Amino acid sequence: MRKTDLIILAIILVLLVTGVGSCRRAGIWLSMEVVPPHADVLVLLMGNFTDRVLQTADLYNAGKADKVIIVEESMGGYRGLTERGVSIISHTTQAVNSCIALGVPADSITVLPGDARSTLDEAVMVRDYLVSNPGVDTLTLVSSPYHLRRASMIFRKAVKHTDTPVFIGCSGSGDYTDFNAEKWWRSKEDIQHVVTELLKTGSFSLIEGRKLKSDE
Image (cartoon, helix red, strand yellow):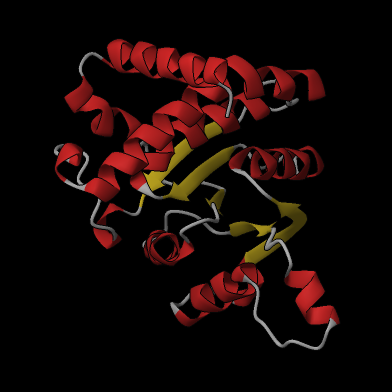
């Protein structure tokens, strides 16, 4: 990474932390959670999917939604391995199988093809799904707690100009992770999560968000 890029990222981080109010509250700010009483769809975001699968199953079994959507995740050399005869189960398939094992009916799960490499890719795929399913107007994103703020920003931006207004809720898998939003600076892993998310949020606000707007 060039020196100028590091300086820009450092400035973004400072501005974000200042805007939040204080560095110590950054974990809480990132972990925003808005769970509607009932959503048309739970969107299980991939990544650290084990804890997210557990939270998705809890929400579904509690009657918080009637359907689960998962965007197919890219696994880099996965196709190369399968083409050479290696038997491997994709992360997406593992997530689907786990949801079913936890009580989510198979016919309530929709996998959107897309080879997604990022949350932005997932948002675009879900947006396209909404265009074909105009009756869906309430989503609950399910992700790790530190990822909720940025995921919500990305999805709101993606669906901003759809014909039907879409409410974006979000629910974190905090019960199934060790992330401490209130005292994140006490753990090396939590520090990495918070700093990385702040940088990515700044990058989305200044760069990626503009690209998403131009694609609409």
